[in-house]
Length: 239
Image (cartoon, rainbow, N blue to C red; front, top):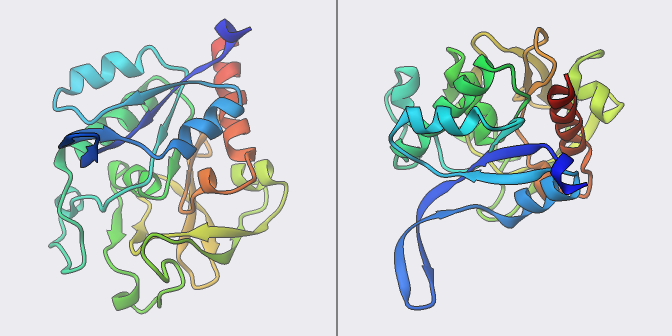
């Protein structure tokens, strides 16, 4: 039965990390992502930040779907903007890797799920741009009231959209921990907003499963987004 599991790749962090006697550059990922995917029926492969786009393409060619995970801010140079004073120091290797993952997955018509930063990367890779700091742009702090914690707010979705179909509703309460957001979705379609007008979901209606969400479903009890991704991956493998 395990051999039938779709193989889903997920991007990860390249950060300085400590364990045991070591304090070194490392490849890390919150365990919740892996747990959610495994419980939904996926075999999980972690895709580390690399410099060689050919390596990324070779890895994605062996996958049934991809997840682009949350994390630090995307380098504003990717959307021709000057860094805001609150913008994180760029993780240039991760930026390059995730953009390559997204483009390679789209070229192969693979299911894609972008989470928080992952949705923002989808927008940037599709020709869009970001709001670099929501509070100073007039959106307040509801999306991240405290570092290292999640806040909650309502979101509404376009009737008939992929996200509305998966969640079986056009309104939901979502969790949140971000200070940036999508300003321009590029070639993607906006299908969800927070109460303050912040973009919460992006999709490509012409594709079977290309979905970005601004919240963190890996930190919620609800696994429907991951279940749907796995179903889409199984369908692709069976085609």
